[in-house]
Amino acid sequence: MRATAVDQSPSKVERRNFQRVRVKIYGRFMLEDRTEHPCQVIDMSPGNVALRADEIGQPGEKVIAYIDHIGRVEGVVTRTMEDGFAMTIIASDRKKDKLAAQLTWLANKHELDLPEDRRHERVAPRDPLTTMQLTDGRQYQCRIIDLSLSGAAVEIDVKPALGVQVILGTMRGQIVRHFEDGVAVEFAVVQRSETLDSEFNSGQD
Image (cartoon, rainbow, N blue to C red):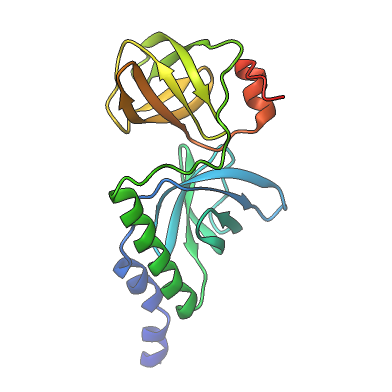
């Protein structure tokens, strides 16, 4: 009986030993009802991952996620947050070793500030004037220089600190870069082209 008690607990110890890495990567996940939703990784280790998403899985629910640079990840929701949820990753030791190597590469890539992923074409919106709202409720008029499905370059008089959460129009995101005339915003989740067209009249046709 003593051996059985010991055998049931290593997963908790194992999870604590994994180092979480903060990375800005996107993906999609599928819940048990087979609906798919976009997400952004907040932090991740080979044993668990925290996702920012508009749709939130419930504790105990099985999730299949497809994450950029990582691939398919399966797991179970362990806790929910205001803007997402965390899940334990179910994988073989070999798969977790591979995840550890991928996360190390991603962490180094972000640390070195390599050029951002350019998969999403940038366009100039037909209606560039909008507002940026900070978490304390302050709003500022601004002009969108260009935008893509994952973010926007914004001409604005103020420069919130890097990492600050903002709402650009109705899109949630965070400040990821400063430049001479404004800031770059990375959206919390990758948007659909129809959503951007509706929001900013972006004219990607």
